[in-house]
Image (tube, rainbow, N blue to C red):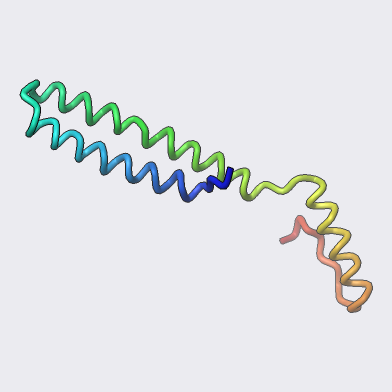
Length: 94
């Protein structure tokens, strides 16, 4: 989908700022009182942990290599060592 972990981290930080802004605006503009302003701030503030968790999950997916990727890297390194005469370093040692 093109969504990256950095997008989620940015959205999480923005939700913290948005939470504070909605709390301030609700407190000053609405006549419902401080309780309602607190509810708005808390409602939006709860987005941050979810967005951070989604960012961590995306980071894991971005850095996770499948077994097929590992085999391809091993075979590419093996081919390079045959042609250049260099030493072969296993992918897990990186």
